[in-house]
Amino acid sequence: MTQSFESVAPATGEVLGRFPRSGAADVDRAVERAKTAYEEWRLVPAPERGAVLFRFAELLRTHKDELTDLMTREMGKVKAEAGGDVQEAIDMSYYMGGEGRRLFGHTTPSELRDKFMMSVRMPVGVVGAITPWNFPIAIPSWKLAPALVCGNTVVLKPAEDTPLLADRFVELLAEAGVPDGVVNVVHGFGEEAGDALVRHPDVPVITFTGSRETGIAVTKAAADHLKHVHLELGGKNAIVVMDDADVDLAVEGIVWSAFGTSGQRCTAASRVIVHDAVYGELQTKLVAAAERLRLGPGWEDETDVGPLINRAALEKVHSYTAIGKDEGAKLLTGGEAAENGGGFYYKPTVFADAEPGMRIAQEEIFGPTTALIPVRSFDEAVAAANSVRYGLSSSIYTRDVNRAFRAMRDLETGITYINAGTTGAEVHLPFGGTKETGNGHREAGQAALDVFTEWKSIYVDYSGRLQRAQIDNAERPAPR
Ligand code: ADP
Image 1 (tube, rainbow, N blue to C red):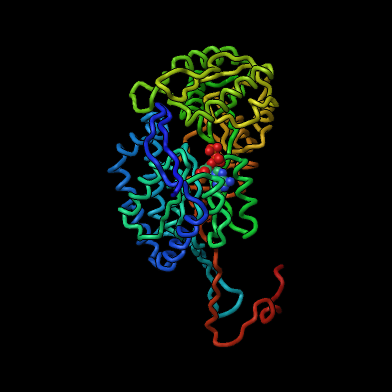
Image 2 (tube, helix red, strand yellow):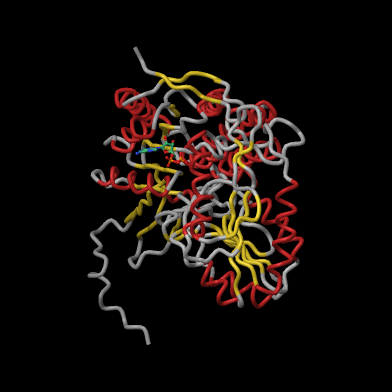
């Protein structure tokens, strides 16, 4: 009998559904279907593939309320954020749909007469997409929309915490006109279904969003076949608040970036680096704002902060409270679970007087915990911000244009915000990080196309004779 697993509502512990716990044999079957479908899908004109994505975007719009509500139940985030998650998928589908009429390549003159040269983007084949639970509709769209418009087929292994949403996502893709076999879902656990997909010899591209540790395991497992691996991993994102900042604006940005999605975002602000001159004022205002936040189920209008995804997450986040106290940071507020109808709630937590090297200031917590780090200068702030292994997002609050530009240059992250928190990506700019947040690739925008295509350079010689580059024209005069 096939084994199964449950999807559990983080706000109540209620079981929402059962799903097959797939293994290597199921992955084999899915890859086989994707491989067969690829031979036809790659030949469908790109504008037609784009038109399917436009229809998908329309369907997401029609079903936005339903998906938003389901997300508050299965994943736990609050209604406004769940709606934003679906909207991101709508935006991405429209953007990549439009790419069907671009997918630009290059032409350039040949060094020889009567010869034409161009480079074009080619699909790669079957894409293995492994996604996390924290953006259960948006992240699959970041991977599948560009993969599909470029002519690839897909096997999706969604996170085991949000299988219902993944099923709805794929059902709507089918309704939009994605042919059978072009998108296939394999439910199950990372070490089983996920690992089998990463190792499958007929899957040349792996696109993965998840933790740094799993990203390393995925890279190693993919190495035997020299696969293209796109990784979008963790963050330890800092908001810098300078002495000339609008402190009230900064507090709003910190609350949104540190406690939104209960801190379960790879762009969450889990460090706030604050100039001494405003340190006292910021602490008081931030603690007051954090204590005003109402915890509850995501589907209730008055809720500001939903539950964590599961019990293991709750335990991990709480363990960091103990670590922070042991390290000598000062707990200003929060630091404990909150009882509320059987859900996995954790109070928004603020530590003060953290030092840049402490574990709470270095390691990704993935919960509603942030650490304030006092500094005396801009240079000290930048050094502290850059002192982590991750490089996803950063932010600075300042009214000094020179400092803002220095920060844009010197903060070692893939994304930098000026006078805004560390979250809020839009789909037409590249998304991703430096250092150990990834491996140099980017999602979204034009950069995403590089993950899902290979460049092919094509030479057409219409001279009717043998022409040898670098040889027959070697006598040309040297440039002066
Ligand atoms: P998180 O800690 O946020 O759950 P993970 O990196 O463990 O992050 O999970 C992200 C995705 O990666 C999930 O879909 C998960 O099932 C999958 N995954 C976990 N371990 C592996 C693995 N060894 N190989 C492939 N996929 C994995």
